[in-house]
Amino acid sequence: MYIQYVGCNVAGSSRIYNYDVLDTKEKREFSVQVQSEAFRPSGLKLQDGPDICFDRLKRELGAETQESRTEGHHLSIRGRDVAEYLEQHYPRQPVAKKAASGR
Image 1 (cartoon, helix red, strand yellow):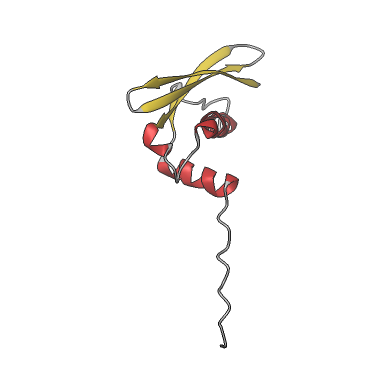
Image 2 (tube, one colour):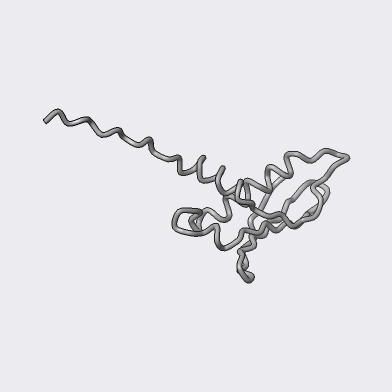
């Protein structure tokens, strides 16, 4: 199976990332929607969009079985997806404790 990113559209208050999933038997088209509010200063960067959507699509496809294929070809990124992505790719640095001043 091969997943190919084919582009992004801005629609209303979201960005929609489009992918083709190519298999030996067929080609399926998927779109993954991210709300624009996820791209804020403390959130995702615009260049994270294709990557977080690719990860989500890959997870959905990985959970497929012969009897149970991914329903619908439109997926959405949820707040939990964003939080997990940010933690993996931009882990918070531990806060250094200030040394107590003895003076």
